[in-house]
Length: 458
Image: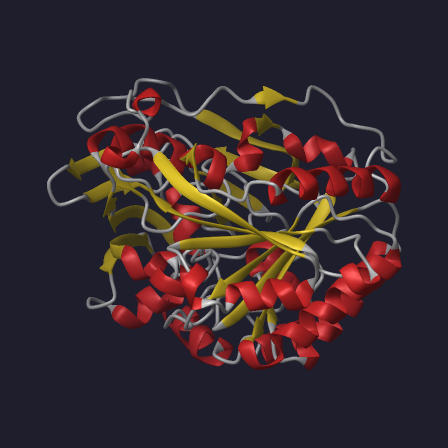
């Protein structure tokens, strides 16, 4: 539970130390100098290169660098108006901490990624999207204001209407324009912690796209689980899971009592590298498809089970063994989405590298964020185990397909893009770089991602 406004923390500051660090995918691993401020007033840039890090839930090297500022203790909920649904909090607060406070009072996050353990600042830095992007846009659309701590130590308020150019560089800017210190967010009203869900089975990818495009099936939230090892006529078989917040009056009596997410089961050790193999994943996928496709009638489920299914397993990244995995996520414009997703799934199936998780979502119009990931089209996310170095050849093949169809890769999950590929995928980079130069001319904010993609170069 985060410290509430007015509380004074008396925990002594933790000294700077150097130790190995990684993202949630556990690749790459780098030795980083780390410092953890205990209070908001201690959150300030140093003289050397640095990057802020929330809960480390990005997958690649976006939250790695020579010096990493850990913001996990800067997590107070500063103000919450239960009438208007406006929340102001320090950026280190997690979505889980926020949900524990707002849901019992009839409010929910306007946009949420697939984990509730991401930090509020991380959601802004990556301009995260959710299952409702086709209706409600990205996270930045619902942010009322942020306080940005610049390289010179000054603090500036930014929003879509105040210092707007800097705001649209900061959202999706992966923490490279400054430290996101505070966030004001407009929440959405709900009358229960439940979601009413309906599943729709698709025998192949063509049926999957037909379901997404059927206006009669459209709902506030939608996501398709895909059996990534299916091939031939079954390539892309899936279960489309559509849902909306359930009104309290529609709930059966047994669900009308206040509830919280259940306690997560933990994976206590790294699984052997061969535990996730084509046979085991194919067996799991067949069982899962049969189970989920059988849910033909609407049903109620707790929000944690619909939005955050993997959070029910603590340390689930250990499923992939000590070497970890790469989560590959791309978005393809509508015009070439079906052909591109077909090619991506075929490449993955032919590689015999099982993806334990494969999900497809529909995205709406692109936001004004200069480096924001979503665009109108479809986004595919894959978890690919790092069993050997051959996986990098597969990733490059996937990048080539995405480039061919005019798509882009999500920076919060990238580990292998080249500077040249990045500049094609993100055509507004030059605008972003001009703002970056203006607010950080000495390039104090750098990460391993920014160095790999040469974001400080012309």
